Image 1 (cartoon, rainbow, N blue to C red):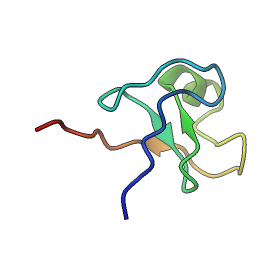
Image 2 (image 1 turned 135 degrees about the vertical axis):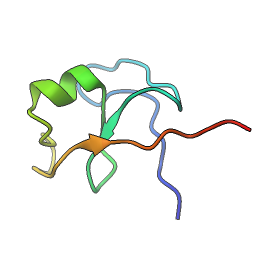
Image 3 (image 1 turned 120 degrees about the horizontal axis):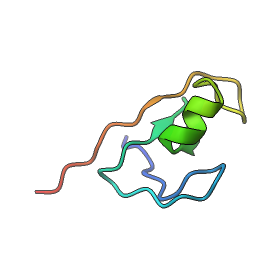
Image 4 (image 1 turned 180 degrees about the vertical axis):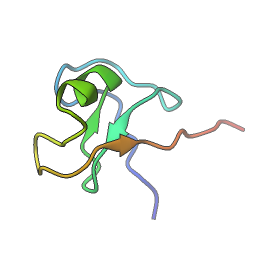
Length: 59
């Protein structure tokens, strides 16, 4: 099962590339580093912890 690599921050709409720094919760809500930091790494949707999303490497 692969992660859904969402292409934008759910708070501010900033574009996120597959290799961009981004933060996700267990439900794969996705946020840019600034919005994640502003929310103290707590998902505003579910209250879960936001952790760094793994980067998808291109071959």
